[in-house]
Amino acid sequence: MKYFILSLGCTKNQADSEVIMGILESKGYVRSLNPEECDLLIVNTCGFISAAVEESVEEILNLVHLKKPGQKILVAGCLVQREGKELAKHLPEVDLFFTPREINNLDKLLADFGENNKLVLSEPGFLNLEKKPRAKINEVYRYIKIADGCDNRCTYCTIPAIRGKYTSRPLNDILEEIRDTLKQGIKEIILVAQDTTAYGIDLYGEFKLVELLRKIAKIKGNFWVRLMYLYPDKITPELINEIKENPRVIKYVDVPLQHIHPEILKKMGRKGSSEEIISTLEKLRKEIPDITIRTTFIVGFPGETEEQFNYLLDFVKKFKFNRLGAFPYYREKGTPAAKMKDQIPKKVKEQRYEKLMEVQQEISLNLNKGLVGKKIPAIVEKKIRGENLYLGRTYMDAPEIDGIIEIKAEKRLKKGQIINVLITDYDVYDLKGEFIND
Image (spheres, rainbow, N blue to C red):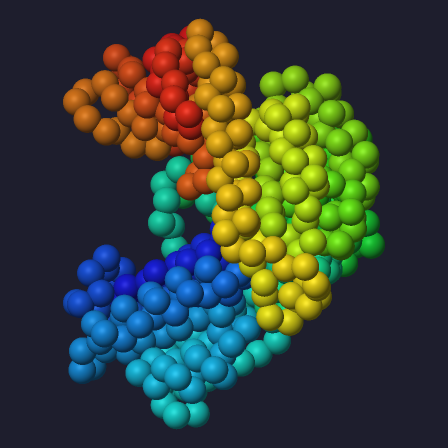
């Protein structure tokens, strides 16, 4: 029996997909990249924003058009949580729709395809607390989900409705998964949650990310830890010091800001003032001079004036983020922002997005230029051609969203090997370098 799976959306969804894969493979299924030869065709959907919904539906329809007699189509994930009844109504060719929490019951669902199981809905959220097997799809890094759901209630966001309230995994459960992951040869542990900085508040009554990092540091092995999705209002001096001093934690943080103008932050329902956010970012750079800060911004939020957009643009020019992503605001059904007046025309939103990214490209190019001649830690991902060229990522680059580095090495390198690289060349996002054997 063979299966094909397409995982869409965020890193948390990727972690869920690997559990789906692990369950299937424990039942004797073999993964194939060719859907035409498979018994099961699976899409783990994203339902976060309109563009993701459209992509998910398009991919489901692609599999429907490919479907042959005897094949079964399974659709899982956030879009099912959000629009499961509508999907089941309009896509009768799909054999099973199930929400993320039902991954725990996938064994039973597979054993009983039928009308009773056409649509299986449940409460939001999935943390794999039952320790279902997880497939290894990357030999270098793995996303470790430390919590699911969100309590922040930003006015534009559908995540609380899709993933439920914030729910942390027990500390020892996370540490056990990390140990198992390292035994598989993986060298980069990437901690993810909708709000990583809130970890532990629901279980222990206080934030426990610092304690988690200290316990991870005691695990033996040669690996590093990357932190994603740190909310600025919860980045404490204690956390900054832990990032600075913990030898396992690389000097990289993903801090999604979404905007910086005080009025827009308030309308978004974001916590922390503009001044407090800027102060936190400055503390990070002061305490950890070699830190890489990634962020994300939304442009064209309802009511955003040209002046407010330029305020954001000026801030980006001044702060010079190492890594920056952006997207136009999407009007999401059921969110408070969708009902706000002064919705921005699509053309204006796209123009602001393009302008912001043009500014960031120039910043990125200049920052990369400044790296030439410097020695930087990197992790090897694969050999590319000949005997001496490899692809990897510096500590400044997270998988899939940031740049890569082409590494020249006279010595043979291994996947997952953490090395020092002398930077020799650059472009807007990517680098070239030479392995330094020291």
